Length: 220
Length: 249
Ligand code: FES
Image: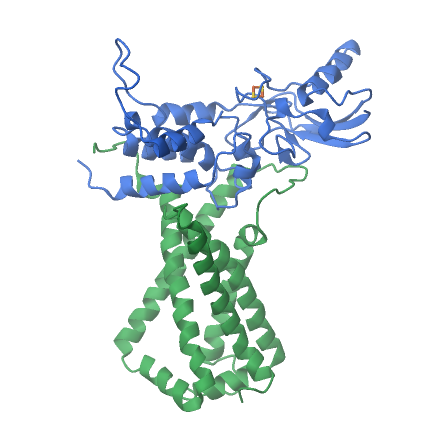
């Protein structure tokens, strides 16, 4: 192939979207694993507290993983802001009233679901990782932190709302990921959409089940 | 039919522009949308007013010159139909119809409903072609094209470059147009030598023209009078990734 001298493909909008898709994939994988780990809440305090201890057993690995996720999230956000600004500049004067024909709710609200989820993550870290906004935080008893934390209805409500938005974000994000990474194959389109939809549904449903179970007194 | 039109009027590029309301009585349901505008214009000329400027050429749905945003939808509500092929029977007596130009930074308004779409020409000049030696034409069957590839190439080649995709996209992105051109040539043997150069150059030009980035919303596909599929964008992305990751030299 001949070299392309005049173009720098890595600064193009499509390259940025590819990076947004890849970092999104990392974060998508993380929320899935995070949800799986949390399921141990239903196995009782010993199980989940031991799991939490295991995760923190090796500080270099723990901090490596944290920095990796922080980097993925930061890049995802910065590039999305750049792209969103470009998009805004591409149509400074809008229509008298655009009648959407195909756009899904999820696809049109990515720019809102994203920042709200970002804000939620900050709150979640302060709430259940750092503990500074938690009424009664313990550094070793994760189980008690979760139960005590979700006993506040507004807090539990915010978690549930954030998870619903996360569901929309992941639903459109997963489809966009296939499209942006050039992984759409008409032959397997149906299966791929079904699989991604199912994973997204499980993530959201299970995550919502935790505050609900605490509020309902099932987990106490 | 008696209609009320709210039409975007703008003297030139620098004019701020505004909506002007016109009554359009006595319109036949068998008229095309553009014929309806012709009638309105004749009446305006008789009254000594400036007619409404709009683009058109073939009026057969094949050239891609026409294009209006009608009641907030590029080319109007009817699917797979250009503005010139839209008929007044799609509307009802007493309707108010809002008519606007394509709106995008990359398509400055020249006058009223006419926009400058030469950004598309520059994207095509950047790579939407094949380099073929001139001379006597080669035999039509000398290069075999697998049926599936021919189908995909032809589907993409149906693009008439009207730019409804840009007009309909909330991001004013030109990805559907560019991907149609890339898919069209990239699926044919004749398009292979420049396949990866093409995708990079066309996307670079697309960015330089000030179009937005695709967020996979699908409004473009819904607005396209030739039903170009969103899938083409996925294919173009794949080619772009291959082009950008392959070793140069
Ligand atoms: S005027 Fe040619 S496509 Fe409408």
